[in-house]
Length: 337
Ligand code: AMP
Ligand code: MG
Image 1: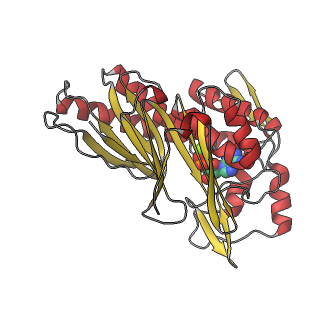
Image 2: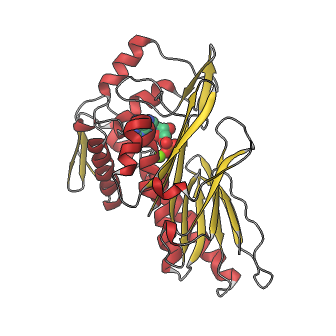
Image 3: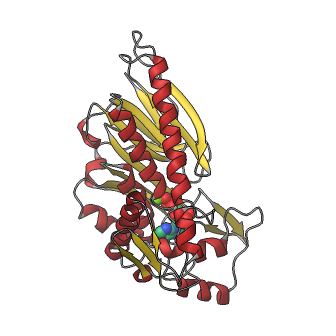
């Protein structure tokens, strides 16, 4: 059996002739697409479809808790009562905020979910995004400080009024992991979930490099519709953070959505980062974090963490260059683009 997965766009090559092929469903959650494919011939299709329905529900449920686009979600209430109130949150949100703060500590604040004011200020989702003025940037940047996100058990409070949290760098990966858990709980042992380019694979309990069953095709960061390369893996999480996913160009400069809290501007050093880990939450958080850390510190982080592999792509003299972590070196195949 040969499968191919394109990050940010899922396609499947044919399965063996005895197979009925995967059951593939698509939807939109968390402002992005979701593709689910289940490859389990032993389970009747109606049953698989019911399980996939509950996965879509689960993703919407998580979105309902974690979105910062609503004032009534749990994250919305933390934000609207910033500097005034402590908000009780569910275990999942307390867990994810706790993990996010750990990544902030590990990256000396380059990964920071209190990035909200800067994300709103840059407004990459607007139809007419603009570069904020230096004074605006300075004002917003001062509001970003993970040390002022307080967590005690299940209670969260932000220390000052204009602070805002934004889980955009980690919540999709978390939703993918929860989805894989639902599939597993229902006896599905072979499936792929792709939520906006955050991919989770379960395959007979395999870890990422224990099998070659799934082929991951990485989009070319500069050539839409082309691939930069591919590699093969078993189960686990894969995530790519790129400067081509949400961006605008002004006066010939590309401004994208992954922001460096130390400058208030888009992180400059690299073009894209792909992370492979045992789970999708880790892959999602780390692809963003390594992106902001940049080539050198980012690769040092990958190299010093067992179970994490990755690729960093950057631009030099108008050419794309890339570096792979050791576990990927013999697996990655560069495309002829
Ligand atoms: P991703 O596509 O997973 O790399 O996440 C990018 C999203 O994370 C952005 O659209 C923002 O919502 C948020 N974000 C941007 N910069 C940061 C940062 N330095 N730390 C944490 N979250 C960030
Ligand atoms: Mg991320």
